View 1 (cartoon, rainbow, N blue to C red):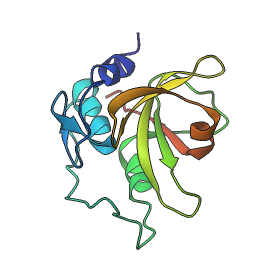
View 2: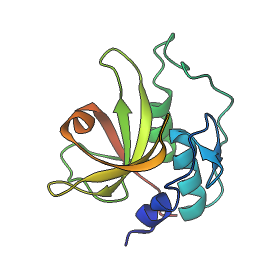
View 3: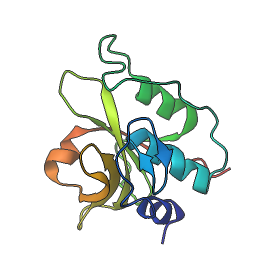
Length: 144
């Protein structure tokens, strides 16, 4: 099994907690990615400053897109989906991209991803068409 997928699945059941990144204690979607980074890559390159639930929206600032390009490796859209990829979602058509998950099973089969979801905690969800349509970028963790 892919090390990133194994690490992400290890977070399943962690309660949702805004701004947190502690497996078993609490995480939001960014906290999940940060925790999997620590487990598979090493020390975090930066620690994000405190952020509100509506961060980046008033300014329409694509913070997560920039961070993905700064710290992860972008996956071209024409490349196939692969387990372990970080998925960035735009939850509203006019909104900024601000939800993250980790692909655990790639399409065309029973695709799925792990994410921290408000009201549900860290869960593994099917990558259904409604979710897939919201993906705006894919990344992979650096290998060194």
